[in-house]
Image (cartoon, rainbow, N blue to C red):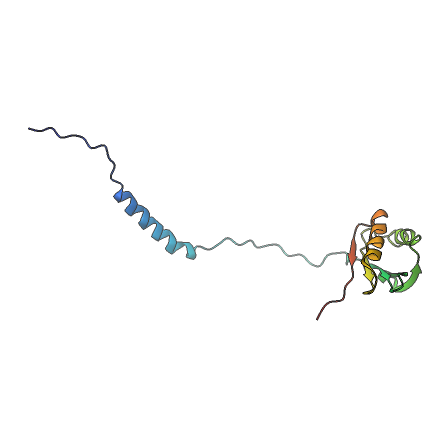
Length: 135
């Protein structure tokens, strides 16, 4: 009589079959799962309307004109030296009032940047460039 030897190998074929069945089940059910959606609360309009901006216009001859939209869009010619004082005076009531720079198309880029630099030195926080929308 021969003695039987023990086999120390694991038969993995049934495990592979089970894994393939589970993979098919997950592939079929995954598109049917509803994703969670969040119902956000709604509020009315904000209490404070956005502030009308201050506009600094740089004309073709590099002269500066300050226009305050909050005060009826009146235009005031200013020099570079008096620009920070005029802005601080205009922003005394609302320091978060945005300032827009409208440079003429023919003005050099350097002139627009120098005005922007003066505004940043005067601690003006909200500075933007005014452009005309394209067609």
